[in-house]
Length: 77
Image (cartoon, one colour):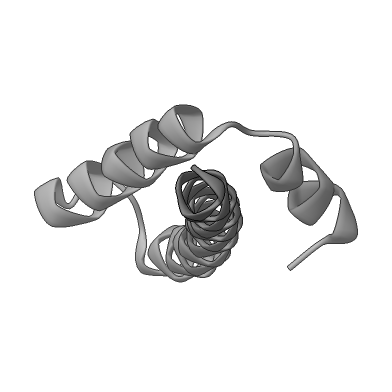
C-alpha cells in the first residue's frame, strides 16, 4: 500500500476509520467495483482495521492507568 494512504489512515479518528471501513465493505459486497479495485480496497480495509486496533489499545491503556490511579487514591483513604 502506498505510504501516502498509510499516512492518510493514520490521521483518521476511530469513528472516521470505522465509517471508511464500512463503506469499503458495502462496495465490495454490492459488487460495485472491479476485482483489482476490490483487492486494493481490501488492503486499505486491513490497514484501517490495524489503525482502529491501535486506537483501541491506546484507549485501553489509558483506562487501565486511570483505574490504577483511582485504586491508589482509594487505598490512601
